[in-house]
Length: 265
Image (cartoon, rainbow, N blue to C red; front, side, top):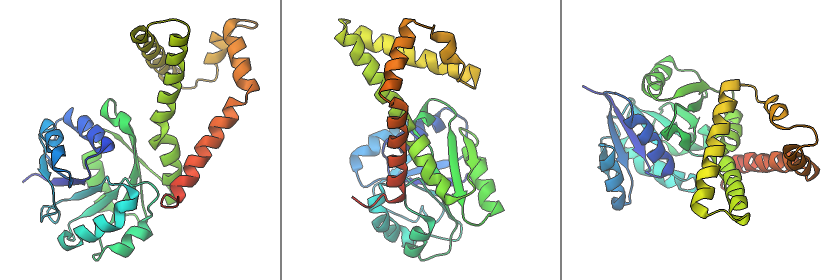
């Protein structure tokens, strides 16, 4: 009999994860639960079972993955309480909600593991960072058995590390996309057609990412590209003069602080 994994919430991150799972061979029965019945078509695309309400499939699931918005966590946990069993391991991908906060709402003593990844899991073997308060070999094995098929698991030493990862890795793709948009718009402002601007920018960003990946340490790459007194150096000097590195660092710190106080406005 195949093991079951139930994912609660069919948003962008769940869709990205299902895309990654769909690329590999596995023997898991995957269930997706979302109150929005219109999302059944998304589940059908990935050939997974869809439910619009909580049922006893949860008590049969080895892993229950919470992919809901943090402000809904109490309602969701209270709703799944009647269906939980000792068989379950709860994995939370909710930003900022601590294990202690979740345990307060759960009526049964089940392992709770906080996790974080990002949407690039749909296209590549990305990291899934995780933290469990007290090490449980059985839980760790079940986690590895499922996630190592389509991702790289990375254990965090503290729960605080998950908050940092949320700001750096979870939000990370948005930073790259934001910069992509700036370059794209610059192409357009300089007279290039929008379609060409998109193609050129995407090629630029993906090509640069591949070079960084091949070189591992990117510090020397800028020196290879920027000649003294040249066009690249002129642009970099302007960025440095405007303290772009400081602006980006402060922005990431703000995201980190928000991850620690996610429910505060």
